[in-house]
Length: 289
Image (cartoon, rainbow, N blue to C red):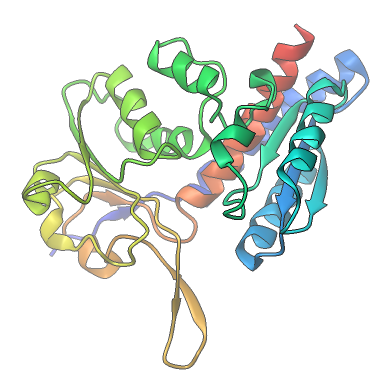
């Protein structure tokens, strides 16, 4: 019985951060200021608090200045928009990130569209998504960039490969589909209405899972030797009451079938934060010419 090789996202992200440190140093030496990332956190949801803290820590390790604007969960939408508009014109702010999800009384799409596209480090503004589709990317979503990096770390060429993405969100699935197509892969976008999902997945050289359902993708969904990228981050409560983090893939079963696989944690997650840093320094460079 073969065992899949792990794609260590943590180690790859460490190498990525080393390059970012150099880029930040060059930027600071040239302009006398560090690139700046401002994060807007609405409410006190524990997962969002953790994610923001991790992003602040990552910024500190590469020399990026980070500021968190903490707003109450019942903040008025106009107040939030006014804050974004102030950050849009602040010269020391090179990147703006809205920590998602937002409370239901706020119109997420409307709020994301207020962000200056050149400060949109999440890559979710329609301008940036449209540039990606046109093959002229400026700032692209972080998690899909991380997925592509991990895939290309074991498959330098995707030309002619069959890739399937399970999950069609604008955060991951849709932009990743464009990136894979731009790399000359033949891409299937699968979702909850896909017929014969297991068969579709089992024909794929690359399988990316981003559905938010712990352990949904079993070994039966995986082509022998395939590259499996598990984007899922699911908090699962144990019988003891403790919570563990599980991916969308049944990891133990997938190990016996896949050629390469990302673990959860230490897979896609560190790469998402890594590319947030990449986007921040890129946004800073774009704004200063």
